[in-house]
Image (cartoon, rainbow, N blue to C red; front, side):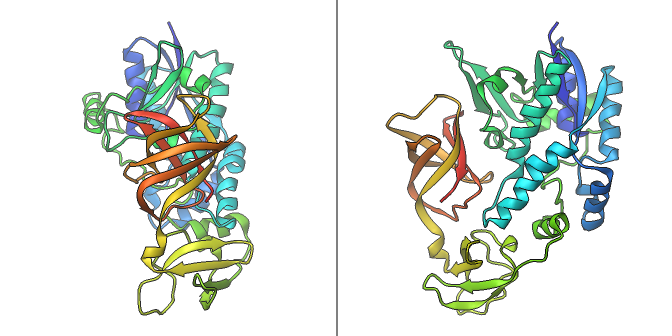
Amino acid sequence: MKKVLAAMSGGVDSSVAAYLLKSQGYEVIGAMMKLFTDEAIGEILEASSINNRACCTLSDADDARSIANFLDIPFYVFNFTETFASTVMERFVKAYQNGTTPNPCIDCNRYMKFEKFLHRADELECDYIATGHYARISREPSGRFLLKTGKDTTKDQSYVLYAMTQKQLSRTLFPLGELEKEEVREIAESQNFITAKKRDSQDICFAPDGDYAGFILRHTKEPQKKGRFINKSGNILGEHKGIINYTIGQRKGLGITAPEPLYVTEINPQDNTVTVGASAELFTKTLTAGDINLITMDRIDGSFNVQAKIRYAHTRQNAIIHQTAEGRIHVEFSTTQRAITPGQAVVFYDGDIVIGGGTIIG
């Protein structure tokens, strides 16, 4: 019997994933990753205006443990607070301080679920790890593993999984990949899971109210450095509150009076300026990505036609990619794209197959 370490967050998806694995005959061990110290959770809840949206709380741990008890499987809580702080939260803070807009869910998957959690699975002599992601994994006759989109296209999470390696894919199970979200909830209700009607987490776990600047201020305890709003000609239009408050494409909260709507078009941490302009200045057809991870191949030879996403909620667009250097890919879209944002991920698809992706650097 194969042994699986199942990540359980206290939500409906991971609950059903663990249930399905046991139903399929696996020896299942449930585990929750403790990502925050008790003090940090208190600060998050106190700062949030929507307290019940925070995750990884004691209540979530109780829910996960309750499901594990119901399934009659062992349950552990792994203390990963230090690793999460250094590999996810600190990277998030530094990205904003450097004028980019990160996706911490990608870092959490990359460094926590499929690295730290997998290491713990090795210690427990597990064959696989499993999560409640809506994605699929298959294996080619050549032996190469492929990452594919989830059957439920409205819940597909392949975008935030593009950094998975061949080793990680070979050791991972996604029990929900072939299911629709509605089916998952129906399974949970049929088993009378206490998580059956639990609301999905939609926000960044350490900033559930979306106040990223507030989180950064609490985390660093450093005052924001004000600077200048300028236009593309370098003319000064006003004073900004600190670059951590802005992202490419932002319109609200600028506080600039102008005859037409203005949007953030560039953030320059070197001279502490935020460039603003008309909506038309946000559109471009090309980008460069770094920190590349390729799944379907080791290297891109020549040009390659793909569909590409430049953010999680972005609709895939036709593009041509080619590798310009080790770890660098140039992307040219067939049509202009709005607000291509440094720090976000660009992910490449061939139908339902994830080719790979990287971090937008310009």
